[in-house]
Length: 193
Image (cartoon, rainbow, N blue to C red; front, side, top):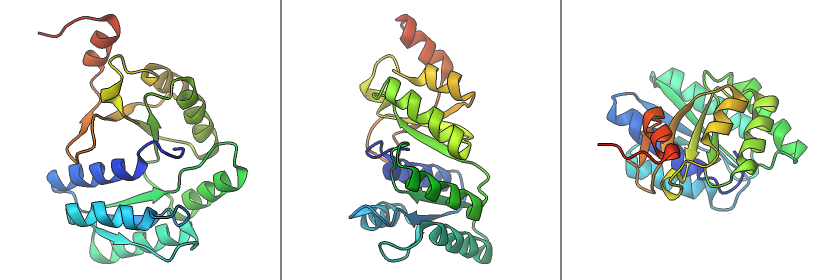
């Protein structure tokens, strides 16, 4: 996803969700660009009790992902969560970096993390990320701030990929599986009993 969508917080929420469901994980701090990114991810993962694999700032993000995968294989860890730098789809160098991470890591699941308040911008971003690296599913953040879900329907329709979760707050438990019935009721203004 792009800058400021809540990717790192969402990674922490996913790690927490996995841990609650007895699935082990490790986090790869592949945002080696943004000041404070390594510390932010480390802070969240320490709170949850999840190991972070990291290198120094300005390191190659793909090598961080590779090392995290090697660690997971050696330690029998189920899931590697790769936290990447936010990037504008117009920044071709950063998009090539993302393609390199995908090539090196060979992920089982690529998630687009989008801001539900971004409207058409989120739709454009999702389409471009899907075209560039091939996303498998979507997670929308800040869903609690938009009563009707904003761009959710368009993102899912245009990318032909499901919305797995929505972020509904800042807490680690504030990640909910996307519920299509609730979403449709909100769009139509129907109150659930």
